[in-house]
Length: 308
Image 1 (cartoon, rainbow, N blue to C red):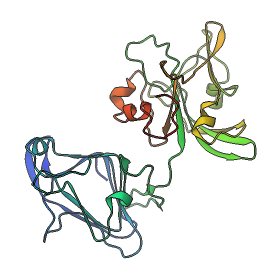
Image 2 (cartoon, rainbow, N blue to C red):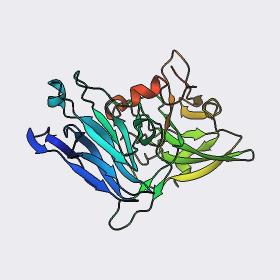
Image 3 (cartoon, helix red, strand yellow):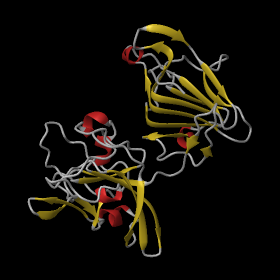
């Protein structure tokens, strides 16, 4: 595990770090917490790049974002990385396939690796590969599978400039059984009373009574207590985007309960994302914190989106 990885050239210093080759066996996981930058030269005898060499199980290379070196990209270097063998690449974003105009590709496939099947990122396959690799003292582990639907909501009554964080309530749709749906509360970032299908969310985190001014603490936003997520059940079946849109979210404001809606042509108070979308810290602008935000509001996460 590393914070950043520079393969080819360190754009923070301009230093040439040289081509690289990462070879991983079954269940190996390489995690880059922030940015992996590739500019390793063309494929050939050296086979620069990342490989899963097990004949059966898979290795995983995971990063927040996988980019090309901005300087070498600007001078039309081909920026190649080679992926090979039984390898999954999992990231929030990954640079697109292309070439430098002379036929040299940005991404090379080798030993059965497929761009269409083995890269999971925005613009490639959605979600994560359906494998789970346990964490060990020498392995950061990997949890895969299809993402859960996540709802993020903002009451749009900000009293602070830039408070457009969509963390007033954040919850996942975990499962439906019979006529009940299990939700998981991730954040309660609003100070006003807020309820989901009639259930006040601060109370789920243990704060059952507001203070003298009628407000609550913020939970899991960096501006108040940090607590474990809490699962709770609501009546009804909510498993598709259109069904989830009908989950009633209300904030108590000016003496009345007001519904947070997602209505076409109006400012959205709630947005459907997935559980790879990390909640935004308090009083941070969501559009600055998440490059994928524009994709979500344009409906690129699911075909049948709430707000376009």
